[in-house]
Amino acid sequence: MFFYKTLLVYQKAFALNKQIYKLLKRSSAIPPYVKNQLGRSTMSVMLNIAEGYAKPGAKDKRNFLFIARASAFETEAIIEFLASEHDIESNEAQAYSEQLNEISKILFAMIKKLE
Image 1 (cartoon, rainbow, N blue to C red):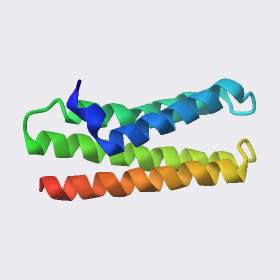
Image 2: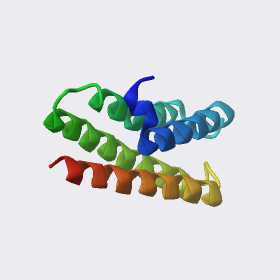
Image 3: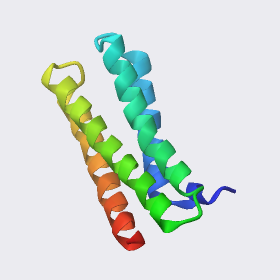
């Protein structure tokens, strides 16, 4: 098994990706360019965690975790915008936001631990 799969933050990012993927498949209200960006930013969180843990040094891991955290912020901004436009339900947006906040906090703690 690849080590990154054992990380709680990766598992949470993976689960969120599955939820966002289903949202993007079912939603016709979201314009294609926004769907593309939301899919890419959400996937970036998960993939940068995985890629960071393929790197041998703490500095490299830390850089990839920074990128993952920035992508979580980007995803949250898109979710907030979609909720403000009523393209997704506010309760659904709130649930995504809570998950992203938790992922962000875990990533921040991991980054600090690698310093």
